[in-house]
Length: 101
Image: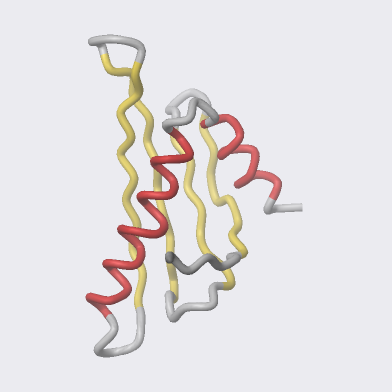
């Protein structure tokens, strides 16, 4: 069973024109520090699809680098892509925006 946890994040940038957004994690229950992510969306010319370019950088405690890379890949990216693939990308962006009262 996968572990679920809550995080607090803040949007740093949102551009309709460039179809990009950036956010950073403020509080996490795992040792991810200075986590900043950038997402760029682009239309795929073959069909009604979207290309995601999702990158992040972060630091962690010495010795946890590989464990945290795997956790980010499997629990953050995979969950985000699954959420986006449901056709509710606007819901995901609203979630990012709503996290910043």
